[in-house]
Image (tube, rainbow, N blue to C red; front, side, top):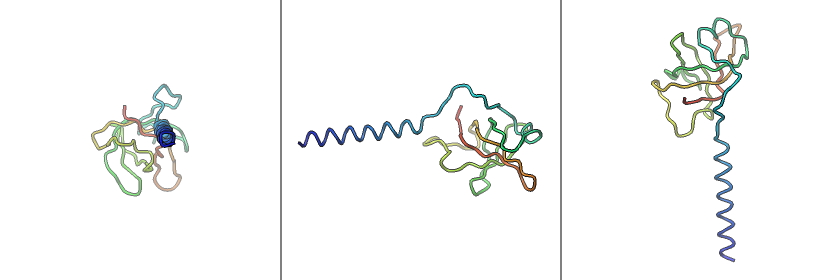
Length: 120
């Protein structure tokens, strides 16, 4: 009986580990979401437009907002805590790809709402 309980506990633990591993998996293949520059997105971007930005998160400006730069310009981006890559530190020297959508404001400052952070 003791061996059955132990075996059941092991199978249950392995199942939980597998479920956790699949939840953190990310698709890394091609995408139909266009890569853009900050300059192009700010000049021609539409509200709720999906895009990929490649550059660096250069500083935190508070309340889940950060300053992102890609060599063509800078833009505020909103990154929720759950979007950050687990156990992979990101600093001002780390090149990242941000997948998300442009939030173009008629009044106030537009920003990019990040749905995924990729570390190329």
